Structure formats: C-alpha cells, structure tokens
Image 1 (tube, protein in one colour):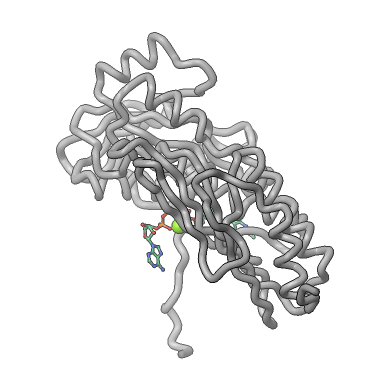
Image 2 (spheres, rainbow, N blue to C red):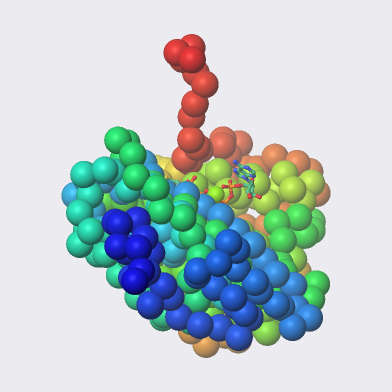
Length: 312
Ligand SMILES: Nc1ncnc2c1ncn2[C@@H]1O[C@H](COP(=O)(O)OP(=O)(O)O)[C@@H](O)[C@H]1O
Ligand SMILES: Cc1ncc(C[n+]2csc(CCOP(=O)(O)OP(=O)(O)O)c2C)c(N)n1
Ligand SMILES: [Mg+2]
C-alpha cells in the first residue's frame, strides 16, 4: 500500500502523468533521475517564479504552472536547444488544497506534453509563505551547437523575433509561446552569432549580450517593434520606454553577420517574425537613434533588488 500522506499522495499522482523520453532512463521514484544524451550536449537551465513577483493572487494556478515551465523553455530556445526533461520544485502555502496543487500541475503538465518534455523529478515542500515554483529544465543540442551570449561581432545585425512591451497588463507574460521553433528555423537558415531571450526587457538584456561579447550596439528607435498591448494613447517616447523596459516579452534577440542579416530580410524563413533593430559596434556601450539623433541608451528593465535595507 503506498504512502497516502499529502506530500507522497501528490507525488504519486504526479508520477502517473510525468511522460516518458528515451533519454530519461530512470525518472520519478528513486533518489535521483538517470539521463543519457546519445552523444549530444545537455543544456541545463533553472528559473524560479514567486507569488507577488511573477504572478499575483488572482492568477489561475494552471497559468502559474504553465509560466513556471514556459520561462525555462524560453531559456532553452535562447540556446537553440530542444527541451527534454524537467525537474519541478514547488513550495506550497500550507493553506493550499490538493485540488489547487493539481490545477497548478495540470497547467505545467499540459505545456510539458505540448513540447514532449518528460517530468523527471522534483521536490514538494509546504510552508507559511507564498507559492514558489522552481523548474530545472534539461535540453539537447548537437555537440558544440548551443548558441551563446558571447558571440556577437562588430557590424553584426541585431534582430528580435516579435514586438515588445505591455506583457504584464495584457497577461501575455502568462500565455506566451516559447520561441523554440523559431530558434530551430533560424539555426538552419543562418549562423547565429549570439542569442538570448528577453525576460527583463530589451533595455536590460541587450546589455548582457554586449557585456559578454565585449562589443557595443546602436539601435534605431523607429525600428524597435512596439507590441499592440502597449496603449496607443501614450506619447511615442513613453510607448518606446514600455518596449524597452516592461520585460517578460520572451522574444529572442540575436545577432548575425550583415550578409546573413540581408539573407533573412530578403528571404524570411517561414513561421518566424523578424525585426531588425540595429547593429553591433566595436566600441562598447549602447546608443539609440531617435529622430536622426544619437542618444545614450541607459540600462533599464527589471532586476530583483535586495540588500538595500539593513534588516538582517
Ligand atoms: N542563485 C544562483 N546560483 C547560481 N547561478 C545563478 C544564480 N542565479 C542566477 N544564476 C546564473 O546566472 C546567469 C544569469 O541568470 P539570469 O539573469 O537569471 O538569466 P536568465 O535571464 O537567462 O534566466 C545564468 O547562468 C544563471 O544560471
Ligand atoms: C505580480 C507581478 N509583478 C510584476 C511582474 C513583472 N515582472 C516580474 S519578473 C520580471 C522580469 C523577469 O523575471 P526574472 O526572474 O528576472 O527572469 P529571468 O531573467 O531570470 O529569466 C517582470 C518584468 C509580473 N509578471 N507579475
Ligand atoms: Mg533566471
């Protein structure tokens, strides 16, 4: 007879629908999972989402589960890898019911099956704090083919795969489709020099790519695609600011040689939206051309602040 106390009953319920993959030789039920790669490279990512920070009390729990996995799939898209197995850590508020916990998991499980992801394991805790979901996601890529942040080169063209801004107000941050297919299509079409996904906002994430690559960038304000979710009644400078700093767009930003960039513009690969927003420069720093005038692009966007007030 299996252990029917809440934690173990819930884990048994999860195990019955965890999916399977040949790479996952041993999944839920032992002290650890066993995976084999078949000669490819593993690409491993982790993102945590927290009540009050990434979703609020009104967010349907199925969408919370969905988002916890989707943000990680987006990180694998940014590396041009294919998702394979997920490990789910959940810290439930003690007041949460079993059916609420199941709803959370259903949202997660549904997205997992859409992307053929096997849930290989995880951990379940409960406490007197808010809901926290932490996902570790493993993906696969042909050896040496992961696309990194540090490969941008001077004169590269910079592209994004979709319009930016307004994702929180519209709820898009809960329902977006990770750009796995787009990354795969682009990887087939051109040589991707550097890539990342836009989670904190263009005005923040661009700098991560520039810093890692040791280059700078010049962006054209008129070319930055502003999402229809950003209110049309705002002045254009405010709309641009939303596109730069709202975050959670989960579009890809990538750089390619000018020749490859030209190719993408002339023959856009099917199923990929593309916006050319600027160029990489040898000189560090980022600037923005607004009405023909070059301005410094300040770092903006989201970052998790802490340690500012001495209460420890
Ligand atoms: N607490 C942590 N311990 C170890 N590595 C971390 C921690 N937090 C973030 N990282 C690492 O720092 C890098 C940047 O993280 P992050 O800004 O969260 O990236 P992303 O936007 O892709 O999720 C990643 O390599 C991530 O694995
Ligand atoms: C309740 C709530 N407040 C604010 C936001 C907006 N927001 C939360 S986290 C975030 C940035 C991305 O999160 P992070 O944990 O930094 O992701 P990572 O860069 O690690 O992928 C944004 C824009 C939200 N989605 N929900
Ligand atoms: Mg992260």
